[in-house]
Amino acid sequence: MSYATSDHWNRVFAERKEAGNDLDWGTQWTKVHIPVLRSANVQTVLDLGCGTGNDVLRLAREGFAVMGMDFSESAVRQGREKAEKLGLSAQFVVADMAKRLPFDSATFDAVMSNVAMHMFSDKITRELFKEIRRIVRPNGVFVFDVNSTEDALIRAERRPAIREIEPNYVLRT
Image 1 (cartoon, rainbow, N blue to C red):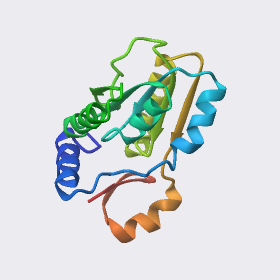
Image 2: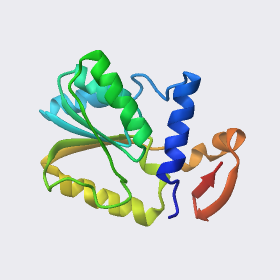
Image 3: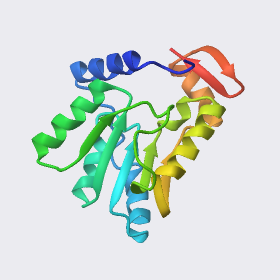
Image 4: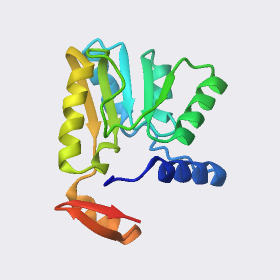
């Protein structure tokens, strides 16, 4: 495996919860994506790499039928707890987006992913894009944000690289 394990992400999300430091970017991405989803008459959305479900819950508040998917059982559990506490209808599933996605073809009107898909090699990323195409209905929508190679210098200041796995794909601490 050339990417972080589910055990790694379980630790990250458990530590963040214990520290009271939920990973939440606010409306940074949903404020851009919601108008696109509405203009395409989207009703069902899959949030790939949903973490603890903050964007899932924002979309649910806006009336979308949302499913959040993450590799971390800890993150998904936290997302379910938040949804229940807020009385919001949202589903969550634990799965590895670097493998075949656990959904039938043409299941969702849209797929959204915010700063989660850049964690993989080029080969895995290309396969993921094929999987997204498979699970999105014809004329569906795919909206996403990823870090760019230009972020490398900023990231290096906070989290040094352990090693370069392939060009522009760096494993960090």
